[in-house]
Image 1 (cartoon, rainbow, N blue to C red):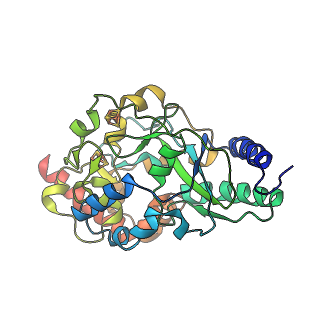
Image 2 (cartoon, protein in one colour; image 1 turned 90 degrees about the vertical axis):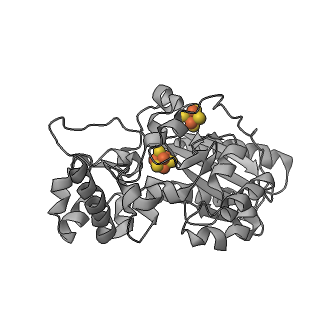
Image 3 (cartoon, rainbow, N blue to C red; image 1 turned 180 degrees about the horizontal axis):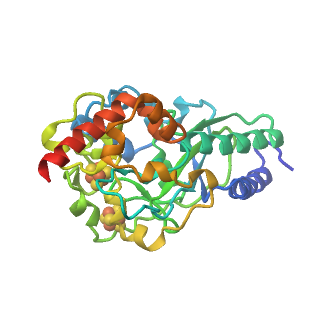
Length: 323
Ligand code: SF4
Ligand code: SF4
């Protein structure tokens, strides 16, 4: 039934891809036509021109690839976008003083491996059905505008906090992309449902959301605690506390997240209780081995012991001085 380039194949295969992606555990799946981006690339140029990417030089260097998915797979025709809900309820011990805060996405297993494994299975099974089909998996590993493709494939819209929001799970989703060289049936792009709300802009403690849909990374806690490798500027760090890895404030205040967050069904995202119940004092006494034991499975391991301790020390010391 899967005759390459046939209309019947396109319809059947599209339906099969959607069903199989859900069976593999993805919360949402959408498909967009692969084509060079338009207005989105103008916005990217403007954002880079204003240096809102701070020291993330790789964003400049790979910008041409970001504009056109053919850079990643010359034969690409379709972009399958998946979303995987990772929300879990906080399970914090009430008696802990001086607790550090860690972004929810890092409470469980590193999503890169989890999402990639599922997409690899999906791609292998597609290629079993259509051996001519070429594919490429991207989970934060390639220069592609995931959020734009999530919107174009009907997964969600890009909110004023610059994150993808879904109507079913809010923004607590990981995104994954599968580029395919076959034509499929395409979904309708998602509309924007932020309306007149501005809660994320108002709640950001460092005013990193400089305008609706515009993030200045050089003011963002997530950027400084995850991407940035130098010394955290003191005047900004005073506003970071108690966030030592990432920041969820602009997600926590979002009405879509308050109303639609649901617990994940992916067991590997269940939280590491030790990790989410750490105090500043616990971490001050950590050796590198302690760090490895606690953060081995979490995406926190990606920044390394020294950078994590830099965050905790910089933010914790200022916190203690100010209390
Ligand atoms: S992650 Fe935190 S610092 Fe960054 S924009 Fe959101 S609220 Fe602001
Ligand atoms: S807080 Fe409001 S403006 Fe911000 S992303 Fe959520 S709905 Fe949109």
